[in-house]
Image 1 (cartoon, rainbow, N blue to C red):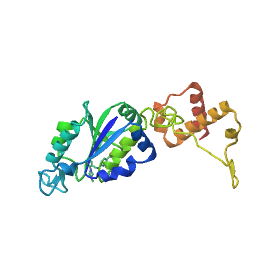
Image 2: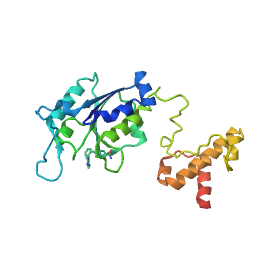
Image 3: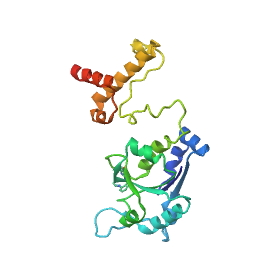
Image 4: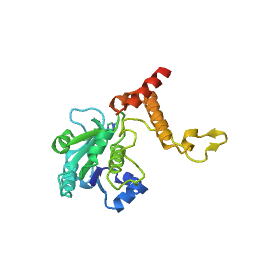
Length: 244
Ligand code: 4H7
């Protein structure tokens, strides 16, 4: 997967790109991430990238010229037509199903906005999809772009270790995870649930499934409508609801 990021702050991506999982994915040629400074494409002598809004009002708008030129340049670096994504609070809210779809794309360009956003003509001409990472406001699109890159690239086959099972993950199966414990089994009197030490894998699986259903019922009941539930799950849930 080739990802190009258009931003006014390319240095923000450096530590993120060099972290262990991302660094290894890049080294193994599973992902190719490139950042481009939009300011480098500004034609005016002060390298200004923003301007006053037509119609007046507060704030500044990212101007067309640097963005048109930056996008034309970056599109030319792709051998296949890239999907151009604009991270914005107006976008469709990203979820795990969308993340899984994007992980199958081969060519992606991410556009990070600042100030009040970008001139609408850039969106109309170039942007394929507008995406939000959640209903809150950020100073710029960079953090949203990192969230996108992190969530999408980890689903590319080979990026995660074989011990990480994506299918069993929370939000893939629409259930929250069960509680996790590690050694020691007794720390200053705080004990790990007995069943996890029993070695009885059938019992352990049943306990974990119950905990997972319980967690979801209490913390995120809205998720349950999408979860695939067996007859046994349904019975367990019914009991859990009655015990409340
Ligand atoms: C595009 C348009 C994404 C990008 C406007 C980006 C939240 C998200 C931005 C803006 C983002 C998200 C500029 C509007 C700063 C708000 C104070 C960058 N915020 N901003 N204004 N939820 N901000 O994905």
